[in-house]
Image (cartoon, rainbow, N blue to C red; front, side, top):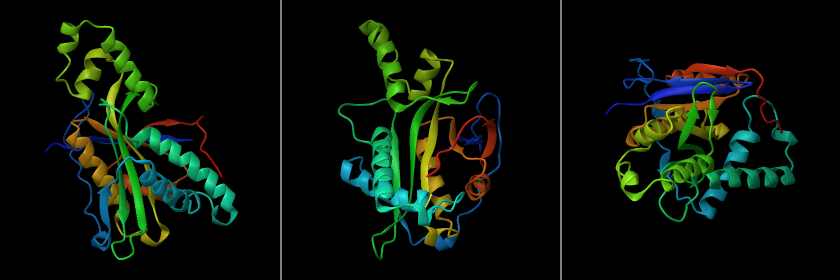
Length: 256
């Protein structure tokens, strides 16, 4: 199967993207990702349900694996229990918006992957991927709610016959037909690996699961945003084949 282009955008900030065999805007690369280290094979990676309990558990891991064990600032000793609870609540709300279960069908799909240690059941890593509408000229990414509303408003303004002509289109095809100023891409977010599992290849395995989802969704590219100062994360993404496509020097990164 053809694999999607990978793009990275960094906050402070730069954007990375990756292209293996499928091209976007005439850009084509045949660079393949490096093999994943065997040391990470013990971790079991599964797609979790978008219910509140599963997302709360993932959010609390993310606080410990990302915020409390930052690769850009030493915040581990600075986070109080109250800080952790507040960050977990904010992270849970963000994950619900991105990956939560919804009533009725949605056009833009998403998945949250969690890696667990089979011997203890503890989470060792997580990552999310979702369909997103992106304005390539400005590097602007619409939220899931904004994107769904854009589609709903446009399709609801049509008659039944006209709307039927778009029924079997994929999300990427529908975006190209209705909103050519946007691209429907896969957006990788919420990647975190527990300190004890870093260097095992788990981060690359989690990224690879996002690649597979983007390919299944027939999307032309996968992108993410990373802080320019986060050298370990950028090294991981670049080793997986991502390349910078734009930088926003004026963007600010959240600090805790």
